[in-house]
Amino acid sequence: MNEMELIGRCGLYCGTCSIYRAERDSQQWREKIAAEHNTTSERVTCQGCGALTSKCWGYDCKILQCIHDREIEFCDECPNYEKRTCSMFTELEDRYTRYGVNLRDNLEMIRAGKVDDLIRFTEKVFTCKSCGKLRATSTNCFGCGAEG
Ligand SMILES: [Zn+2]
Image (cartoon, rainbow, N blue to C red; front, top):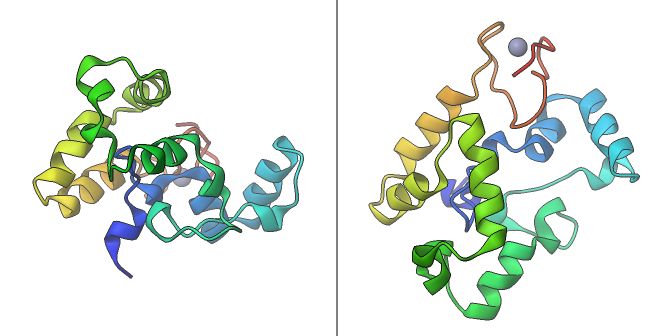
């Protein structure tokens, strides 16, 4: 698989997204997420930001729509990025800062061709300290249930 398929246009690494992980790691969590969003577990599916199909959870992403409208590839090409005036990006950025991931650093790494570093760093942040499995953002560990 091309690793760029798992790199979000906002700088996120899709490999630790709860939708992406639940589909691959835990049918139980998949059903839980589906119930929380009032949908079926089959809908909890995604191939990553760079390989979206109409079935993917991320297909309707507002950030992605904005990127397309602006005819850019990544958020850091937008004039609102430097000015810090994009509320969509700021909201996401703030959320991920709490998890220990800096989306601006990520976008810089993508620019510098250091996608491997980005993935390695993010996976380190989201490796469960109890069982060693890769965790997902904003959920308990799918492997052992430990809190994040
Ligand atoms: Zn665990």
